[in-house]
Image (cartoon, rainbow, N blue to C red; front, side, top):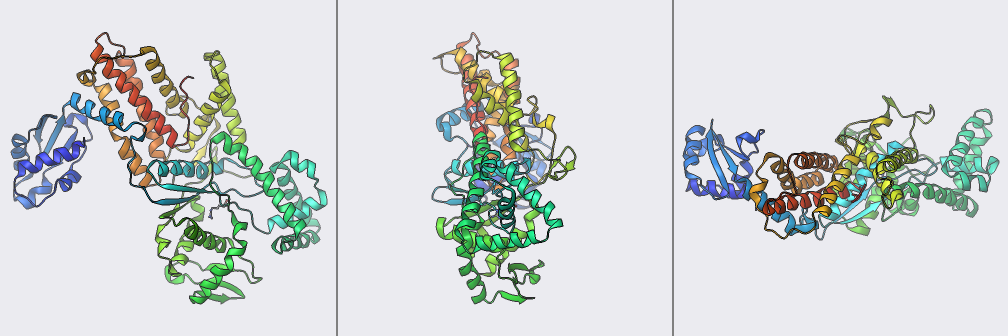
Length: 565
Ligand code: ARG
């Protein structure tokens, strides 16, 4: 039951003749900041003009006219009409609806028949995964799950950074000082070492730069040896990254990265030329964006080489042609705001009406204990180190508190990853994240492990309770603690809808923490296993729905909900 709409219908009945619709009135209803003022309030000044009456008079008139069995009281206060919903009926309607919808509770069918492409994580070859990549990876993963939950077809793309002159340099360095076995064993770390060494030695020996250029040219020309080394670098990087993705539980449908578009840029450049958008500028080819207040988009360098944006133009077109998306999202840090503005503008100028369906989901920077990350100065936290530490901490706590738990390895992983990911998804995405070891590894308060623990607690209550065949008496859920849990459960669909519209997983993260907190208060204040079987049945139903909603919310931010901890 939609109380908002039901109240609106009652107001409409009491008003008699108007041209307003119930939906319009429903949209005017507010939720008072303090529940002492009711569950919903109607600001009567919104009707003053139409009815030519003061808000006070309207409120007084309506207060005596509106009656419905689901309302326990209707009060006129200072031009507001305050509605109090009958607590037992409210709890019953909310819980029965959630129960009936089961695992689908919170979603609707708005995405059926639609497709979204999500570009996230998009790591660079021969670089190590650090905490700066956590946001794109986990925001993208969460949106991917959220869209699917709403019935969309979702395509997750890891747009690998696998193109650029640096790969020529890496091959040059590898040819001089590297050997296969060391790189095979050391993985990305070894490749980074080679790259650092290249730069150090190139200062003394400029011939190295030429070697690097030479190798890059060979990659471009498709030389078999250059390509085989380059592809092997890619394999080694992905093998390392896959381990981290496996820990995080993140997957992709496509790894088509920058190099995938090598043979797909010609047509884009031709199209730009045909449409008269391409201009020469000191030998380079650009699209002038001055009329739109932006620097030009550099499409081809004077040596004919393509750029990051050229590849993104080809990628955008390819994604439209391949998936025929209704939406295409790029989860990338705000440093690339300008890049995406330029990209979308050029697509629009090319006459692609679907340019409007492309969106940059940007997010803040990550700093480390108050300072910007810097690999060179050693101020960097690698993701696998962080996850490993978190998992070890979880393991130590389990060994101490629940030594007989089955499946300790897997549950430690779930909790450790839960702590880190929850921390990363807790704030609005646009806020910068300052990363502190002790905060990311905190297991108490508003943290992933706390929410997971609450879920396990509700599982344990339900296990102990066994079957309860009595009819629930919803009067037993009239107390403030139970009501707060019910209120949050009622909000879940709205939270998910907004999270989807704003591409904001943090709304789900915070919601799960609020619900966990509300449930714990209920758990400590009320006796779930009451002697009164009707009350017991009602409290168990509340516990069960709450457990399911926490599990669903955790799932949508990419986390598991262990049943025992
Ligand atoms: N690899 C890029 C980087 O690390 C991010 C790529 C984002 N996706 C895109 N289609 N441009 O900065």
